[in-house]
Amino acid sequence: MIPFSTSAGALILGAGLFFGASPLAAQAPAAPASCPPEVVSVDTVVDTLFGWLPQRLQGESEAQFTYRAAQERIALGLVDVPPMLGRRDGPSTWNAESPAGGDHLVDAEALVWFQLYGTGRLSGMKLERRSGWSRLDVALQRAVVRADSMGSFDAAPASLGGAPLDFWVAAGFLRLPNAGNVPLARVTRTLTRYQGDVIQPRLLDYDRRRFPDIATRAGAEPRITFVFEVDTTGRVVPGSIRPAQGGWRPFTVEAALVLRTARFAPGRIGRCFVPQRVTVPFSLIVR
Image (cartoon, rainbow, N blue to C red; front, side):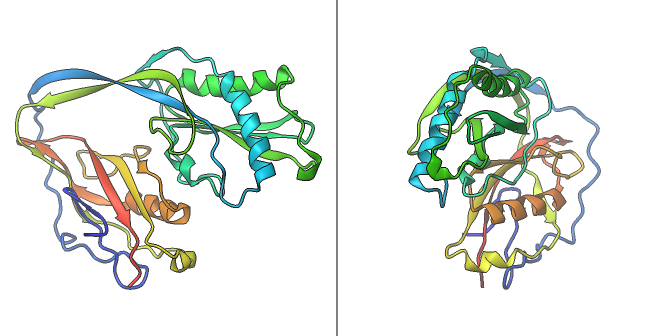
């Protein structure tokens, strides 16, 4: 298996912890053809967004998980979002960082962090990841504020020391394994089919970048799959990078940084260069 492979090309991990050179690096993309491809059909697809019930974080004690899970369930139970959100109405943002020990949250479309005092009162809140559906982002934050104003959050057990604690409310398309998934809303997206053969973007070059030393202690070969858009100039569209499958957090962060530097030969439909979404798996192989 090629460590980083797709019909768009391959990022091969070289000796040690470096990304190796691409055999296509010497090529350069041609100027995009100035022609719109012929549209054959336009279809609307409906997906479901789920609110994620808590999973136990790595290194979290049973007492910490029990208390955190109860508070996150309270907030999620107060989320009031329209059953049909339609299409995204704003920009989405994805930060490769995820909460320590919470690598499963890397797949979230929307992520709200909040913090409670030991008394159970709200001490802080932040929208960490915008979904692009403003009503969803507002609904998640409003649920946290509503729970606080109603006095719904519990005081922390004395065994947890009374210091402020961190919590998250998350929503995503995936069904998390070994956890509850609460349907929140239906969303729509458009699929356009064009006349002509589809030629996927082809990788030309990327920034060679060393992985953190911690990667040598991973114990297994980390993997992460990304979905992103390549524009007609061969660049990855800023803000389009999304994890399609979660991975080891330090590796996920580094892989996302490398993707932002990648240069592709643009995808084509017939003779026309068009933006295309690409799915690419990364694998770290220590040689």
